[in-house]
Image (cartoon, rainbow, N blue to C red; front, side, top):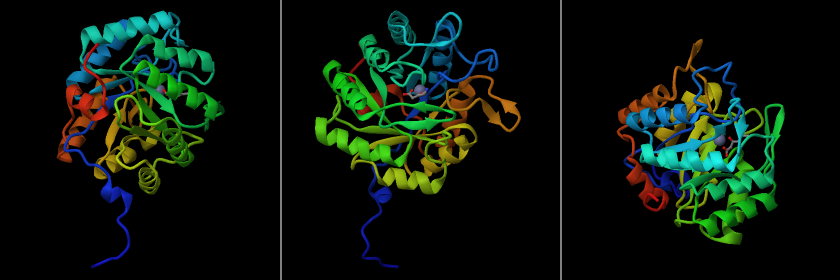
Amino acid sequence: MTSSSPAHPLRAAPRHAATLITVAPTGAESDKTAVPALPVTLDELVGTAKECRAAGAAVIHVHIRDDQAHPTLDLARLKDTVRALRENTDLIVQLSTGGAVTDSFGDRLAVLDAAPDACSLTCGTVNFGDEVFANPWPFIRDLYARTQELGVVPEFEIFDLGHAATLHRLLADLGAPHGGHVHCDLVMGVPGGMPGDVATLAAAVAALPEGATWSATGVGRTTLPVLLAALSAGGHLRVGMEDTTSFARGRPVTGNAELVERAAALAGLAQRPPMLPDEARVMLGVNGRH
Ligand code: KMH
Ligand code: ZN
């Protein structure tokens, strides 16, 4: 069959022979008492990080907790966390600037002072269950400008299609990110954000800037459909207990490593085995280890 229609952007998207696996082990939403396997102390986080590295992760997306296991953006704790993860693993350390829905914009900006390799940067406001995850344009702009000043590589979080339009606006206004490469994470299946299905994934990928690479994350029961769709479309993966606490129906996750192991096994079956952290540094434009 011949066709004169232009190639769909998915066909022109960069495809990698290997799969970047990011682990998001903790998040800000789950409660330690309800989810005992959630890593909340620094020791638990480092232990999880080592296991997930061995299972195939290259990037760790980090939220931290205080002594009561509540989400915190305490700067001293964030600095200790970055140091401990670097001392114990060669993972790329990506701090969350999303925090919890209750965190102030000032505290979220100050996360970058902990000097991580990378950070998340959400490209718009989204309903988040019964809450609102607020990311107004002036905050997005300030946060992005600060990543450029401090040399932190942003990962652009896309919870909805309009966020992709905001990403285009951001790049047009302020130029390329530190490291020169645009990498996005499609966060799908959040109640209030875009659904985690194949049609939406294809539409979101088509809306990304040319040359961007992307991962996808399916929250809750969309974890597996999004993972399989991302692999088949040439994307990368984010998995972890931030996004799902069920391994299968009625079977709670026992630890982050089993989610990474499953992702790595499926990536291997797709002939796109996990990427090593140093390969991921090259792809993402993250400088060598500090
Ligand atoms: N906890 C959510 C409100 C991010 O890490 O950048 C925001 C979030 C996104 O998890
Ligand atoms: Zn997060």
